[in-house]
Length: 422
Ligand code: ADP
Image 1: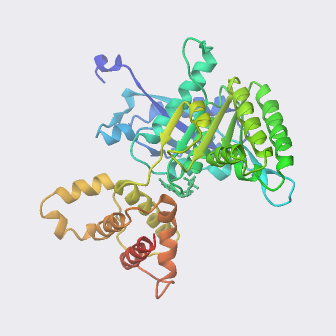
Image 2: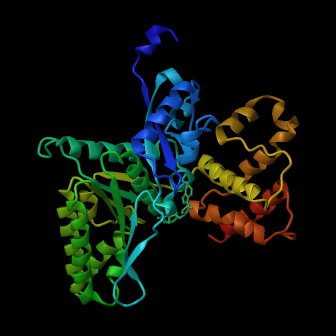
Image 3: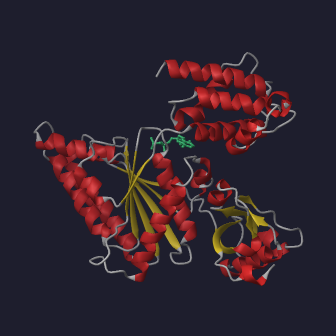
């Protein structure tokens, strides 16, 4: 390696190390072992799993998987990151298998909130499964990371303003709620050395407006008292997810016009006051979602610093979502395919640009069908797209043996039907 290149500023790349549930190894010992292993590994860096060499017995014994993250922006620009350009930032974590803790709102049906210890097993892989235009997920991650850093360093909020409220808005089914949970999970992993404990509390806004209005005020108070207790522990990082905030705004408006009991306005106001209080806690991040873009109560919009529009998937995202579905059906043996070749969208586009190759190359038969399907699916949400392969499978004449290419024909037909019913 030329020494002039060694002095260039290095690119920080996150390396996530997931411990086996059984492992009792010390985090910093694992971290050092992974750093040594990466140093020896002198390869290029791209997103994805890193195999553990067979002579690394300590790692093999304790580590479930090692993954390189966040290099996609570079890959998008066709730049390859070589080992000497990179400074790996190793994050070691163990997934919590505790599952969700619930609290009922009192009517025995709707629970008013769910609670998880992060990083949780349920959210493992969620971040990777969500596909958006390049940069959206990275941007959110960076915003949140900067907000945590500013707080950590004690930047005076009178001189530089920022807060820790994130609002994701856009049509239903575009993955906003999932993205909030996945973001919390990511941050819990990335900030684990500063915050060894991390929790996510999901507030079900709808349930706060159940028939027990008079109970709701008490519920909000109880809930936030609990959150406040979590936040007081300074090594705790606490995420509060409030889904569909527009239902709060709507309830308030209805109350003002007199069509709803005035109890509801008290609930909303209580919630807003509590959110403001929580804002001053450096270790709390509030995540909110809304299915309405235009009509959200200004009270909410003003409170959020980080607002991101999450739209319906682009053709590239649709291709990638369907590609991951297809790979899963092939992995599980539901579909058969002799020559499995499913390139990424970008690499397929490049291949199709080569003259002649596009007609004669039989390898491209399946990817081309996938692309056709992605084009047909314009207007479908991510949620519908992930359901489509299931619906298509149910429509097969022989569901027990089907090759991928035939399956794609059924999938395209199913997609057309779904769209005609929109
Ligand atoms: P929203 O909160 O916007 O209504 P959800 O988070 O409930 O959406 O999304 C429902 C499901 O749809 C997700 O769990 C995910 O499987 C799928 N989905 C939605 N958008 C996407 C996307 N862009 N990429 C991958 N999957 C998606």
